[in-house]
Image (cartoon, each protein chain N blue to C red):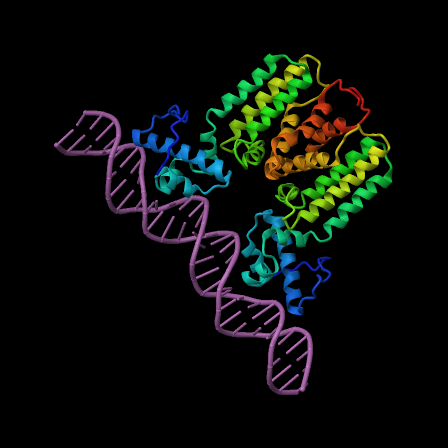
Length: 204
Length: 204
DNA sequence: CGACTATACGGAGACAGTCTCCGGTTAGCA
DNA sequence: TGCTAACCGGAGACTGTCTCCGTATAGTCG
Protein backbone atom coordinates (compact mmCIF):
# COMPACT_ATOMS: atom_id res chain seq x y z
CA UNK A 1 0.00 0.00 0.00
CA UNK A 2 0.88 3.65 0.03
CA UNK A 3 2.61 3.59 -3.35
CA UNK A 4 4.43 6.86 -2.95
CA UNK A 5 5.67 7.82 -6.37
CA UNK A 6 9.21 8.74 -5.54
CA UNK A 7 9.66 10.98 -8.55
CA UNK A 8 10.65 14.60 -8.36
CA UNK A 9 8.07 15.23 -5.67
CA UNK A 10 10.83 16.18 -3.29
CA UNK A 11 10.05 19.50 -1.75
CA UNK A 12 12.44 22.08 -0.45
CA UNK A 13 11.76 22.77 3.20
CA UNK A 14 9.38 25.65 3.95
CA UNK A 15 10.52 28.62 6.00
CA UNK A 16 10.50 26.86 9.35
CA UNK A 17 12.15 23.44 8.92
CA UNK A 18 9.78 20.67 9.89
CA UNK A 19 10.61 17.83 12.17
CA UNK A 20 11.80 14.82 10.22
CA UNK A 21 8.61 12.81 10.64
CA UNK A 22 6.50 15.82 9.80
CA UNK A 23 8.39 16.42 6.59
CA UNK A 24 8.00 12.75 5.72
CA UNK A 25 4.26 12.91 6.16
CA UNK A 26 4.06 16.18 4.30
CA UNK A 27 5.72 14.63 1.29
CA UNK A 28 3.59 11.50 1.44
CA UNK A 29 0.48 13.65 1.56
CA UNK A 30 1.49 15.71 -1.44
CA UNK A 31 2.26 12.56 -3.41
CA UNK A 32 -1.05 10.97 -2.43
CA UNK A 33 -2.92 14.16 -3.28
CA UNK A 34 -1.32 14.23 -6.69
CA UNK A 35 -2.52 10.68 -7.27
CA UNK A 36 -6.05 11.21 -6.05
CA UNK A 37 -6.58 14.51 -7.82
CA UNK A 38 -5.28 12.95 -11.02
CA UNK A 39 -7.76 10.11 -10.71
CA UNK A 40 -10.78 11.79 -9.24
CA UNK A 41 -10.32 15.45 -10.05
CA UNK A 42 -10.08 18.41 -7.71
CA UNK A 43 -13.05 17.18 -5.65
CA UNK A 44 -11.41 13.92 -4.62
CA UNK A 45 -11.89 12.95 -0.99
CA UNK A 46 -9.38 14.41 1.45
CA UNK A 47 -9.80 11.52 3.86
CA UNK A 48 -8.98 9.24 0.96
CA UNK A 49 -5.77 11.16 0.45
CA UNK A 50 -4.89 10.84 4.11
CA UNK A 51 -5.63 7.12 4.03
CA UNK A 52 -3.54 6.63 0.93
CA UNK A 53 -0.67 8.55 2.50
CA UNK A 54 -0.97 6.30 5.53
CA UNK A 55 -1.69 9.11 7.98
CA UNK A 56 -4.72 10.23 9.96
CA UNK A 57 -7.05 12.98 8.81
CA UNK A 58 -5.78 15.18 11.61
CA UNK A 59 -2.30 15.13 10.15
CA UNK A 60 -3.61 16.15 6.77
CA UNK A 61 -5.59 19.06 8.13
CA UNK A 62 -2.71 20.28 10.27
CA UNK A 63 -0.44 20.53 7.26
CA UNK A 64 -3.13 21.77 4.90
CA UNK A 65 -5.99 23.59 6.61
CA UNK A 66 -7.96 23.85 3.38
CA UNK A 67 -8.21 21.92 0.17
CA UNK A 68 -6.64 24.80 -1.68
CA UNK A 69 -3.58 24.74 0.55
CA UNK A 70 -3.04 21.18 -0.57
CA UNK A 71 -3.56 22.04 -4.21
CA UNK A 72 -1.13 24.88 -3.80
CA UNK A 73 1.46 22.52 -2.37
CA UNK A 74 1.28 20.02 -5.19
CA UNK A 75 1.75 22.87 -7.67
CA UNK A 76 5.12 23.78 -6.26
CA UNK A 77 7.13 23.31 -9.45
CA UNK A 78 4.18 24.12 -11.67
CA UNK A 79 4.89 27.87 -11.49
CA UNK A 80 8.39 27.41 -12.80
CA UNK A 81 7.17 25.37 -15.73
CA UNK A 82 4.59 27.97 -16.63
CA UNK A 83 7.12 30.74 -16.58
CA UNK A 84 9.59 28.69 -18.59
CA UNK A 85 7.00 28.05 -21.28
CA UNK A 86 6.14 31.71 -21.57
CA UNK A 87 9.79 32.64 -21.86
CA UNK A 88 10.29 29.97 -24.48
CA UNK A 89 7.33 31.28 -26.46
CA UNK A 90 8.81 34.75 -26.49
CA UNK A 91 12.35 33.57 -27.21
CA UNK A 92 11.26 31.44 -30.15
CA UNK A 93 10.40 34.69 -31.88
CA UNK A 94 7.91 33.16 -34.25
CA UNK A 95 5.24 35.11 -36.12
CA UNK A 96 2.70 36.54 -33.70
CA UNK A 97 -0.03 34.07 -34.62
CA UNK A 98 2.17 31.06 -34.06
CA UNK A 99 3.47 32.49 -30.82
CA UNK A 100 -0.04 32.88 -29.52
CA UNK A 101 -1.17 29.48 -30.72
CA UNK A 102 1.71 27.86 -28.98
CA UNK A 103 1.45 29.85 -25.79
CA UNK A 104 -2.31 29.47 -25.43
CA UNK A 105 -2.00 25.74 -25.83
CA UNK A 106 0.63 25.68 -23.12
CA UNK A 107 -1.57 27.81 -20.95
CA UNK A 108 -4.48 25.44 -21.31
CA UNK A 109 -2.26 22.49 -20.60
CA UNK A 110 -1.16 24.08 -17.35
CA UNK A 111 -4.67 25.11 -16.44
CA UNK A 112 -5.90 21.55 -16.83
CA UNK A 113 -3.32 20.00 -14.52
CA UNK A 114 -6.11 17.75 -13.36
CA UNK A 115 -9.88 17.73 -13.71
CA UNK A 116 -11.40 20.74 -12.01
CA UNK A 117 -8.12 22.61 -11.78
CA UNK A 118 -9.10 25.21 -14.38
CA UNK A 119 -12.28 26.10 -12.50
CA UNK A 120 -10.36 26.42 -9.24
CA UNK A 121 -7.73 28.65 -10.78
CA UNK A 122 -10.33 30.80 -12.50
CA UNK A 123 -12.18 31.27 -9.24
CA UNK A 124 -9.04 32.24 -7.34
CA UNK A 125 -8.10 34.82 -9.90
CA UNK A 126 -9.70 37.73 -8.13
CA UNK A 127 -9.51 36.38 -4.62
CA UNK A 128 -6.31 37.45 -2.87
CA UNK A 129 -7.36 35.46 0.17
CA UNK A 130 -7.12 32.19 -1.71
CA UNK A 131 -4.05 30.04 -1.02
CA UNK A 132 -3.59 29.59 -4.75
CA UNK A 133 -3.84 33.28 -5.54
CA UNK A 134 -0.07 33.37 -5.95
CA UNK A 135 -0.28 30.67 -8.58
CA UNK A 136 -2.82 32.71 -10.46
CA UNK A 137 -0.52 35.67 -10.41
CA UNK A 138 2.29 33.55 -11.77
CA UNK A 139 0.04 32.57 -14.60
CA UNK A 140 -0.99 36.17 -15.17
CA UNK A 141 2.63 37.30 -15.13
CA UNK A 142 3.65 34.64 -17.60
CA UNK A 143 0.79 35.55 -19.88
CA UNK A 144 1.62 39.21 -19.55
CA UNK A 145 5.16 38.47 -20.63
CA UNK A 146 3.94 37.08 -23.92
CA UNK A 147 1.23 39.65 -24.50
CA UNK A 148 3.51 42.56 -23.64
CA UNK A 149 6.16 41.26 -25.97
CA UNK A 150 3.71 41.09 -28.82
CA UNK A 151 2.34 44.48 -27.95
CA UNK A 152 5.81 45.97 -28.09
CA UNK A 153 6.34 44.55 -31.54
CA UNK A 154 3.02 46.12 -32.55
CA UNK A 155 1.63 42.72 -33.45
CA UNK A 156 -1.44 43.22 -31.29
CA UNK A 157 -4.17 45.79 -31.50
CA UNK A 158 -4.03 48.69 -29.11
CA UNK A 159 -5.67 48.38 -25.74
CA UNK A 160 -5.36 44.63 -25.49
CA UNK A 161 -5.31 43.91 -21.75
CA UNK A 162 -3.38 40.80 -20.89
CA UNK A 163 -5.63 40.25 -17.90
CA UNK A 164 -8.68 39.91 -20.11
CA UNK A 165 -6.85 37.61 -22.47
CA UNK A 166 -5.90 35.49 -19.51
CA UNK A 167 -9.47 35.27 -18.32
CA UNK A 168 -10.66 34.40 -21.77
CA UNK A 169 -8.27 31.51 -22.13
CA UNK A 170 -9.08 30.37 -18.60
CA UNK A 171 -12.69 30.29 -19.62
CA UNK A 172 -11.91 28.15 -22.61
CA UNK A 173 -9.90 25.78 -20.46
CA UNK A 174 -12.67 25.62 -17.91
CA UNK A 175 -15.44 24.73 -20.33
CA UNK A 176 -13.23 22.26 -22.18
CA UNK A 177 -12.37 20.60 -18.89
CA UNK A 178 -15.91 20.62 -17.55
CA UNK A 179 -17.48 19.23 -20.70
CA UNK A 180 -14.71 16.73 -21.15
CA UNK A 181 -13.90 17.63 -24.72
CA UNK A 182 -10.35 16.93 -25.86
CA UNK A 183 -7.90 19.79 -25.73
CA UNK A 184 -7.48 19.94 -29.52
CA UNK A 185 -11.10 20.93 -29.95
CA UNK A 186 -10.29 24.11 -28.10
CA UNK A 187 -8.20 25.28 -31.04
CA UNK A 188 -11.06 26.93 -32.95
CA UNK A 189 -11.95 28.98 -29.91
CA UNK A 190 -8.37 30.00 -29.43
CA UNK A 191 -8.27 31.06 -33.07
CA UNK A 192 -11.19 33.39 -32.52
CA UNK A 193 -9.42 34.98 -29.59
CA UNK A 194 -6.24 35.28 -31.58
CA UNK A 195 -8.09 36.89 -34.45
CA UNK A 196 -9.65 39.21 -31.94
CA UNK A 197 -6.41 40.57 -30.56
CA UNK A 198 -4.10 40.43 -33.56
CA UNK A 199 -3.61 43.74 -35.33
CA UNK A 200 -3.46 42.27 -38.81
CA UNK A 201 -5.25 39.13 -39.70
CA UNK A 202 -6.27 37.53 -42.96
CA UNK A 203 -9.83 38.70 -43.65
CA UNK A 204 -10.73 35.21 -44.83
CA UNK B 1 -43.11 29.02 7.04
CA UNK B 2 -42.93 27.74 3.52
CA UNK B 3 -43.12 31.15 1.87
CA UNK B 4 -44.06 29.91 -1.55
CA UNK B 5 -43.60 32.79 -3.93
CA UNK B 6 -46.80 32.55 -5.86
CA UNK B 7 -45.46 34.36 -8.91
CA UNK B 8 -45.42 32.90 -12.37
CA UNK B 9 -43.99 29.66 -11.03
CA UNK B 10 -47.11 27.88 -12.14
CA UNK B 11 -46.16 24.89 -14.20
CA UNK B 12 -48.11 23.23 -16.94
CA UNK B 13 -48.70 19.58 -16.07
CA UNK B 14 -46.12 17.10 -17.39
CA UNK B 15 -47.14 14.31 -19.76
CA UNK B 16 -48.87 12.17 -17.12
CA UNK B 17 -51.06 14.43 -14.97
CA UNK B 18 -50.00 14.23 -11.36
CA UNK B 19 -52.32 13.68 -8.50
CA UNK B 20 -53.41 16.96 -6.94
CA UNK B 21 -51.21 16.65 -3.84
CA UNK B 22 -48.25 15.57 -5.92
CA UNK B 23 -48.61 18.57 -8.19
CA UNK B 24 -48.87 20.81 -5.17
CA UNK B 25 -45.64 19.46 -3.72
CA UNK B 26 -43.94 19.61 -7.09
CA UNK B 27 -44.72 23.31 -7.35
CA UNK B 28 -43.66 24.01 -3.79
CA UNK B 29 -40.37 22.23 -4.42
CA UNK B 30 -39.64 24.20 -7.56
CA UNK B 31 -40.38 27.44 -5.77
CA UNK B 32 -38.20 26.49 -2.83
CA UNK B 33 -35.40 25.41 -5.14
CA UNK B 34 -35.56 28.73 -6.91
CA UNK B 35 -35.16 30.47 -3.58
CA UNK B 36 -32.33 28.34 -2.29
CA UNK B 37 -30.36 28.33 -5.53
CA UNK B 38 -30.73 32.08 -5.73
CA UNK B 39 -29.35 32.46 -2.21
CA UNK B 40 -26.77 29.73 -2.04
CA UNK B 41 -25.96 28.96 -5.65
CA UNK B 42 -26.28 25.71 -7.54
CA UNK B 43 -24.73 23.73 -4.69
CA UNK B 44 -27.40 24.63 -2.16
CA UNK B 45 -28.55 21.78 0.05
CA UNK B 46 -31.33 19.64 -1.36
CA UNK B 47 -32.57 18.69 2.08
CA UNK B 48 -32.82 22.39 2.80
CA UNK B 49 -35.00 22.78 -0.26
CA UNK B 50 -37.23 19.95 0.89
CA UNK B 51 -37.46 21.45 4.35
CA UNK B 52 -38.30 24.86 2.99
CA UNK B 53 -40.96 23.37 0.75
CA UNK B 54 -42.39 21.62 3.80
CA UNK B 55 -41.97 18.11 2.45
CA UNK B 56 -39.71 15.17 3.26
CA UNK B 57 -36.52 14.41 1.38
CA UNK B 58 -38.14 11.33 -0.09
CA UNK B 59 -40.71 13.47 -1.84
CA UNK B 60 -38.04 15.65 -3.33
CA UNK B 61 -36.04 12.73 -4.66
CA UNK B 62 -39.09 11.03 -6.10
CA UNK B 63 -39.95 14.08 -8.16
CA UNK B 64 -36.35 14.96 -8.98
CA UNK B 65 -33.97 11.99 -8.92
CA UNK B 66 -30.96 14.24 -9.43
CA UNK B 67 -30.02 17.79 -8.72
CA UNK B 68 -30.01 18.52 -12.41
CA UNK B 69 -33.59 17.36 -12.79
CA UNK B 70 -34.55 20.00 -10.29
CA UNK B 71 -32.51 22.66 -12.02
CA UNK B 72 -34.13 21.66 -15.26
CA UNK B 73 -37.58 22.08 -13.73
CA UNK B 74 -36.98 25.57 -12.41
CA UNK B 75 -35.77 26.61 -15.85
CA UNK B 76 -39.07 25.82 -17.46
CA UNK B 77 -39.81 29.27 -18.85
CA UNK B 78 -36.14 30.15 -19.16
CA UNK B 79 -35.91 28.55 -22.60
CA UNK B 80 -38.67 30.74 -23.95
CA UNK B 81 -36.98 33.88 -22.68
CA UNK B 82 -33.69 32.90 -24.25
CA UNK B 83 -35.29 32.27 -27.59
CA UNK B 84 -37.25 35.49 -27.41
CA UNK B 85 -34.08 37.47 -26.75
CA UNK B 86 -32.31 35.93 -29.70
CA UNK B 87 -35.22 36.66 -31.98
CA UNK B 88 -35.35 40.21 -30.71
CA UNK B 89 -31.65 40.64 -31.37
CA UNK B 90 -32.10 39.53 -34.94
CA UNK B 91 -35.26 41.53 -35.48
CA UNK B 92 -33.72 44.74 -34.20
CA UNK B 93 -31.52 44.60 -37.26
CA UNK B 94 -28.78 46.73 -35.77
CA UNK B 95 -25.22 46.85 -37.07
CA UNK B 96 -23.48 43.51 -36.56
CA UNK B 97 -21.33 44.72 -33.69
CA UNK B 98 -24.25 46.08 -31.73
CA UNK B 99 -26.27 42.98 -32.40
CA UNK B 100 -23.52 40.82 -30.97
CA UNK B 101 -22.90 43.07 -28.00
CA UNK B 102 -26.52 42.96 -27.11
CA UNK B 103 -26.99 39.26 -27.69
CA UNK B 104 -23.86 38.20 -25.83
CA UNK B 105 -24.91 40.23 -22.83
CA UNK B 106 -28.30 38.55 -22.89
CA UNK B 107 -26.61 35.21 -23.20
CA UNK B 108 -24.46 35.84 -20.17
CA UNK B 109 -27.45 37.04 -18.21
CA UNK B 110 -29.25 33.80 -18.94
CA UNK B 111 -26.18 31.70 -18.22
CA UNK B 112 -25.83 33.29 -14.79
CA UNK B 113 -29.38 32.59 -13.69
CA UNK B 114 -27.87 31.86 -10.30
CA UNK B 115 -24.38 31.27 -8.98
CA UNK B 116 -22.91 28.11 -10.45
CA UNK B 117 -25.46 27.91 -13.23
CA UNK B 118 -22.97 28.80 -15.96
CA UNK B 119 -20.61 26.02 -14.93
CA UNK B 120 -23.46 23.52 -14.86
CA UNK B 121 -24.69 24.53 -18.29
CA UNK B 122 -21.20 24.45 -19.74
CA UNK B 123 -20.64 20.98 -18.38
CA UNK B 124 -23.91 19.66 -19.78
CA UNK B 125 -23.17 21.00 -23.21
CA UNK B 126 -21.69 17.81 -24.57
CA UNK B 127 -23.49 15.39 -22.31
CA UNK B 128 -26.74 14.19 -23.88
CA UNK B 129 -27.42 12.14 -20.76
CA UNK B 130 -27.75 15.25 -18.63
CA UNK B 131 -31.28 16.32 -17.71
CA UNK B 132 -30.42 19.87 -18.70
CA UNK B 133 -28.99 18.90 -22.06
CA UNK B 134 -32.18 20.14 -23.69
CA UNK B 135 -31.69 23.54 -22.13
CA UNK B 136 -28.20 23.67 -23.55
CA UNK B 137 -29.56 22.91 -26.96
CA UNK B 138 -32.07 25.68 -26.64
CA UNK B 139 -29.25 28.02 -25.87
CA UNK B 140 -27.24 26.71 -28.79
CA UNK B 141 -30.19 27.07 -31.11
CA UNK B 142 -30.84 30.62 -29.99
CA UNK B 143 -27.22 31.51 -30.46
CA UNK B 144 -27.17 29.82 -33.82
CA UNK B 145 -30.12 31.95 -34.87
CA UNK B 146 -28.14 35.11 -34.29
CA UNK B 147 -24.86 33.84 -35.68
CA UNK B 148 -26.50 32.39 -38.76
CA UNK B 149 -28.33 35.61 -39.41
CA UNK B 150 -25.10 37.57 -39.28
CA UNK B 151 -23.36 34.99 -41.42
CA UNK B 152 -26.03 35.32 -44.07
CA UNK B 153 -25.60 39.06 -44.16
CA UNK B 154 -21.86 38.44 -44.59
CA UNK B 155 -21.10 40.35 -41.44
CA UNK B 156 -19.05 37.51 -39.99
CA UNK B 157 -15.91 35.91 -41.27
CA UNK B 158 -16.23 32.61 -43.06
CA UNK B 159 -16.08 29.43 -41.04
CA UNK B 160 -17.39 30.92 -37.84
CA UNK B 161 -19.01 28.01 -36.02
CA UNK B 162 -21.81 29.08 -33.74
CA UNK B 163 -21.05 26.18 -31.45
CA UNK B 164 -17.59 27.50 -30.74
CA UNK B 165 -18.91 31.00 -30.20
CA UNK B 166 -21.39 29.57 -27.76
CA UNK B 167 -18.69 27.77 -25.82
CA UNK B 168 -16.55 30.85 -25.77
CA UNK B 169 -19.27 33.00 -24.26
CA UNK B 170 -20.14 30.23 -21.82
CA UNK B 171 -16.54 30.27 -20.74
CA UNK B 172 -16.65 33.98 -20.15
CA UNK B 173 -19.84 33.63 -18.15
CA UNK B 174 -18.36 30.80 -16.12
CA UNK B 175 -15.20 32.62 -15.10
CA UNK B 176 -17.09 35.83 -14.40
CA UNK B 177 -19.50 33.90 -12.21
CA UNK B 178 -16.82 31.87 -10.46
CA UNK B 179 -14.58 34.82 -9.69
CA UNK B 180 -17.51 36.98 -8.72
CA UNK B 181 -16.66 39.88 -10.99
CA UNK B 182 -19.59 42.03 -12.08
CA UNK B 183 -21.11 41.29 -15.42
CA UNK B 184 -20.03 44.61 -16.95
CA UNK B 185 -16.40 43.66 -16.59
CA UNK B 186 -17.02 40.88 -19.05
CA UNK B 187 -17.52 43.43 -21.82
CA UNK B 188 -13.82 43.69 -22.81
CA UNK B 189 -13.69 39.94 -23.24
CA UNK B 190 -16.80 39.96 -25.32
CA UNK B 191 -15.28 42.68 -27.47
CA UNK B 192 -12.30 40.48 -28.20
CA UNK B 193 -14.58 37.68 -29.29
CA UNK B 194 -16.61 40.05 -31.40
CA UNK B 195 -13.48 41.39 -33.04
CA UNK B 196 -12.46 37.82 -33.64
CA UNK B 197 -15.54 36.84 -35.58
CA UNK B 198 -16.51 40.06 -37.32
CA UNK B 199 -15.48 40.25 -40.94
CA UNK B 200 -14.68 43.95 -40.88
CA UNK B 201 -13.48 45.65 -37.79
CA UNK B 202 -11.72 48.89 -37.11
CA UNK B 203 -8.02 48.08 -37.07
CA UNK B 204 -7.55 50.38 -34.10
C1' DC C 1 23.12 7.92 27.27
C1' DG C 2 18.92 8.95 29.53
C1' DA C 3 15.46 12.36 30.49
C1' DC C 4 12.75 16.11 29.07
C1' DT C 5 9.72 18.89 26.18
C1' DA C 6 8.09 20.92 22.14
C1' DT C 7 6.27 19.04 18.24
C1' DA C 8 3.64 15.98 15.76
C1' DC C 9 0.53 11.97 15.25
C1' DG C 10 -3.98 9.77 14.48
C1' DG C 11 -8.40 8.21 15.26
C1' DA C 12 -12.86 8.81 17.51
C1' DG C 13 -16.60 11.33 16.65
C1' DA C 14 -19.51 15.64 15.76
C1' DC C 15 -21.56 17.55 11.89
C1' DA C 16 -23.57 18.13 7.23
C1' DG C 17 -25.26 16.58 2.93
C1' DT C 18 -27.03 12.75 -0.14
C1' DC C 19 -30.16 9.31 -1.01
C1' DT C 20 -33.25 5.08 0.08
C1' DC C 21 -36.60 2.26 2.02
C1' DC C 22 -40.98 1.22 3.55
C1' DG C 23 -44.97 1.70 6.88
C1' DG C 24 -48.54 4.92 6.82
C1' DT C 25 -51.67 8.23 4.41
C1' DT C 26 -54.75 10.03 0.96
C1' DA C 27 -56.74 11.38 -3.61
C1' DG C 28 -59.70 9.90 -6.92
C1' DC C 29 -63.02 6.80 -8.31
C1' DA C 30 -66.86 3.40 -8.40
C1' DT D 1 -68.62 4.76 1.58
C1' DG D 2 -65.01 1.86 0.66
C1' DC D 3 -61.16 0.50 -2.20
C1' DT D 4 -56.67 0.90 -4.24
C1' DA D 5 -53.03 2.94 -6.67
C1' DA D 6 -50.39 6.78 -5.93
C1' DC D 7 -48.06 9.38 -2.86
C1' DC D 8 -45.94 11.03 1.53
C1' DG D 9 -42.19 11.62 4.84
C1' DG D 10 -38.87 10.63 8.09
C1' DA D 11 -35.62 7.32 10.09
C1' DG D 12 -31.30 6.10 9.06
C1' DA D 13 -27.32 4.29 6.16
C1' DC D 14 -23.64 6.24 3.93
C1' DT D 15 -19.94 9.48 2.56
C1' DG D 16 -17.10 13.31 3.19
C1' DT D 17 -15.37 17.36 6.18
C1' DC D 18 -13.07 18.86 10.06
C1' DT D 19 -11.72 18.99 15.27
C1' DC D 20 -10.19 17.69 19.64
C1' DC D 21 -7.16 15.68 22.66
C1' DG D 22 -4.67 11.71 24.64
C1' DT D 23 -0.51 9.46 23.02
C1' DA D 24 3.98 9.07 20.82
C1' DT D 25 8.46 10.63 19.47
C1' DA D 26 12.31 13.66 17.41
C1' DG D 27 15.66 16.51 18.82
C1' DT D 28 18.17 18.44 22.56
C1' DC D 29 20.62 19.10 26.73
C1' DG D 30 22.84 17.80 30.99
